[in-house]
Image (cartoon, rainbow, N blue to C red):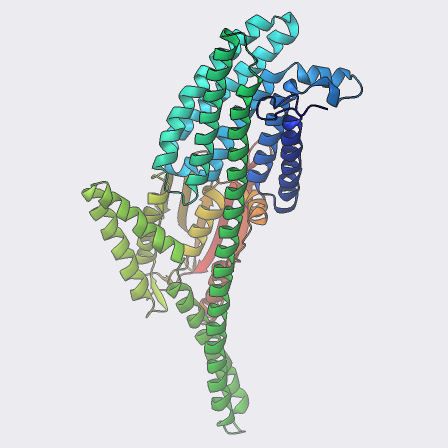
Length: 498
């Protein structure tokens, strides 16, 4: 039996079905990875491979199918819809892989709208082909689609090269090989058809481009998974070290307290023990807030300095100076409050405003902060625990507003209930606690926030010293349709004049 050159006859030699089988195994493997890790990139890559298989299914020879089948015949007759689908999934996959939305938000919005239009265009082409069975018209519509995709590809290639993502070259090189293979295949097939020659060999270049691209994309996904796992391990190690340091400090305090207790006389033992217990709780509370301040969200400090650095790089000196002054003032106030058990209400409000201003750099000033204070409250003399509001504001921003696609609003109101108490409400219009909890579950690395628990303990000690109490409630807000409309933190604390 005469051997068939698979480079010259990739369809009839069986080379194509060999490629389709490999891509199918790749697709199943990555879909299983998605089922395990819930990483959307794996799902996109698996669907991208399936769309390529559907596109090339048209070129399979009938000898590979012992029985004719209506479904298979229909799939083989619709190569263009699979080709169009592969282009759309390609753009979505590469944008998500390189985090284009973060680096180029405006361009991302425009291209996303263009992809939506192309998706509608593809559906209309499919419907027209099914209804009219006019292959010539469908080909003409498809050629218009290819022109639009080519223009978008040039624009996105520029964005890929400008991207700072460490794994961008997997996408750039893979896409480049596919483009070269596609255009070579197109040019040679046109030339062969014009000369009435067999143009099957032209597809070898297309399949070579597909093969290199899909392998590079798979390697990029593996590299990304490795970096994510490495980052998780480093973060866990830092948490372990921090926990050990906190435990050492707490053990030191407990040892000192035990020594103090042993030195008391039996006559005053019960009274002194109660005092020491209060002292222990206060020292532990002070220790917790000191630790909280010393590690006050390192990501917040790093991202703030990084944003200010970008203002300097972009020669936006006025913005850089403005936010640098805000940042330095915030840090000074945090360090100053470290040595005070309580600060004035006006200082606490100013500290919250500074914090939101700095966070707003990361959100392109999308967060609208409104603070309303009852005029009857002497904000300069009323004392509150230092940094008592900041954890609630931070929680509202990062768990409520950061994932919201609507206008981001944050309200803080301070009202006087009576001569002895004030009410502080912190309200956001974010995604709500239920949706925020679902997002945290999907993250590969979860870090439990201790800021709210520490704040509640400090409020308990603050009010106990004055023989009073406080109220702390978190309420989920809903709109008329029953959908989540944000979260409300309700605080009632005693008026303490310092």
